[in-house]
Image 1 (tube, helix red, strand yellow):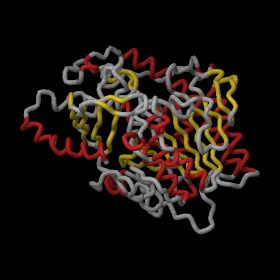
Image 2: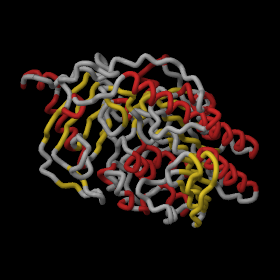
Image 3: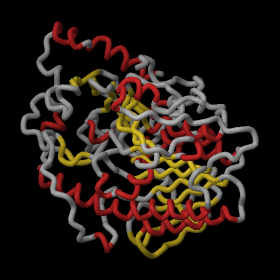
Image 4: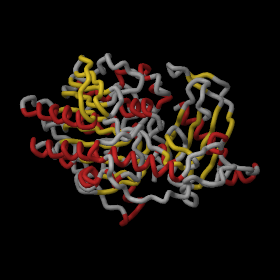
Length: 470
């Protein structure tokens, strides 16, 4: 596996002539099926349509609730087994999806700072400028005024987050649309696809239901759905947290709390699964299934009482690992394969632009997934907003397949995302993810300098410092 980090500003991504998953296949040998090459688009050939589905707070280990989605996008596409978000919080993550950049570069460091995103850097700007018909259906960015039209989308039904009888901005008019919002979003997206019968432009549809975000309100038909029994995992709730930072030591969430959140999330996702199936059926009816690039990802994960916590915004695996699928039969990616490279939300914009044959004029931190590039680790970062109730400090983390190193800092942001504070490191964590995949033993707890040296902490700290400014 390559030792290179993710691309910095201005570095071009590899061509889509590359083979998706080549590096992962080589690393895993025969255990990982080869993924077909994504051929370059021939001169004059149709550019792919793009369907980007982003769910809200959906962690991994939720595939029971989305069998039709998995059958289509994993069974007839690619399942990324090491999918991450680079900031496990809604607006920063979605801004990374749009821009292909880390939050420290796009500036949306918290949910209040959505207007800090430079709209010139967004995927939707590039696609619209290149002649794509663009549509947004569902949630956009936190703290975005519902009356403000989302830039570079010509057809939209922007949701003020809710589950029932939602307030939408529909192409400039704010109004309430009765019904379950996932269904409303599905129907608006289907109508957008239907217009391609008469509008021959390629299209980009950003479909983003509120599920599985709290308050986890299910569609009535799924309200009483039984979900598979769950007995937790070793991190739920983790009895001895003496090696963790104070906010984790003080966590009070129990296995029963985790079961409750899990069940509610799964029920909301059943409606998402119905919507995805309806979109697939529409593409098939339109004859567009083969030449539509479909990407599905959660905007962040969620803890089910792991380490005594529910929620997101923490540097533990359930918060930043997410479901991540891609399908594009017309590009050779329809065979049902897995890819174990470390991939992230910052890779989505470069991947879509690569497929569309568009060269961006603003920098990306991510890389196109159609090349053989394989990063050896990923930066995950999160900022404390203000000095209020959140007990966590700002943190950043070096995440590899076999280890994770995290630092907490005396830093905070204001509503615009501006950072202040001394930057002093207040706490550190190190986990051997091969021996300790549930992050139960912080290797730096009471470690001697010699033990830290043996773990390679100086090098990890230097790499993390470089990542935070790259």
